[in-house]
Image (cartoon, rainbow, N blue to C red; front, side, top):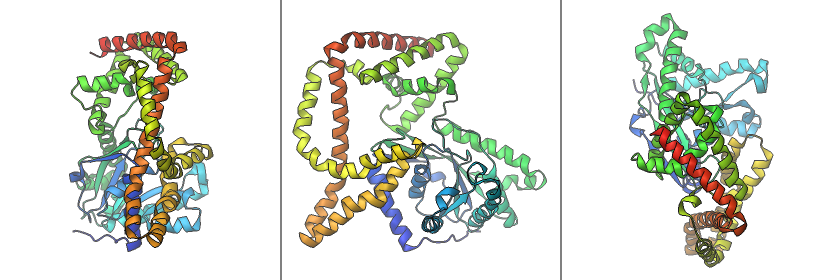
Length: 451
């Protein structure tokens, strides 16, 4: 039986369109959404389950993707403390999760109300989004899954007398970079798992069935995402994956190095090979990891990038980049003002105020949506419309994202300019030659082991 979920108010629909503009139009360079055909029709009780890599960005991107349905999320209880936020968050479908480590043992009982509300949303045919790791990760790997999401799902099925199918939809998210604006992100949806075939067994052995289904869901999600299980060598593996060696590996194995969905598949294969090689030839790989650590530290100290060793620029490269920067400087000065207010200044303050750096991009988007965009876009458009007319206001509205993109690319070009200058400096030649030799040695040994 198809159920009728609650509808969003006109205000929430409008606010979601606005967030879509800030998130997808300004913050991210490109979003890749795969497997939308696997998402059950609206009105089907569905629990979307995902890895948790980037705090508030994860549910926000899913919510802005599945715009045809009423979405419900469970978030940390501490964000509900403010009465105004509490009302607004609940109106948007968020429910509080109380943790013993933060709210104390006495608050844990309140989770029963949250689970009941989440179950009611399912029985109403709505969609529930949960992260079974119970916390976000600061690395590209998948933690242990708790089974609370399945308890909610099966209890909702029980309330419907086990007559209505409840679906679990495995999904994953992946970011080209966790912390910077104008990068790419990806959401994947796998085929949904029907809980109906498990109903009879659940009535007899509920925990046994939930553990079994949980393992299936987790394995599906792990297969979709980039999962680096070798945490001892995580930094070195992740560094090599992002260097020119990772690009070369992608190209040589038929993947598109600069297209995130294809690059994810390449990185999965590369990481698996690295970890298998570590298990088979630990001594050789340990030496490679030690040398990789030295190489990464060396290029960081010199403020150069790995790609410079491939292109091997002469003095003309920084000169041309410097000339380009000089020619674009007037446009950059105009464009940098809204860009600074949008993402640069908020990021600086947020990075200093919060300890968990995985929250930086989430709060950056929030600060932009509630403060920066109104100051830099909405108010100027209104003022221009009143003072100079509609066409001036429209022109500024169209130019606004272009200014942001120009300023961001200018800063990237400047970083490349500084790196090129460091690379060709006479005083750095000996160190560059040493690092080049170390880099070549690492890459050659990797080729021999991985192939």
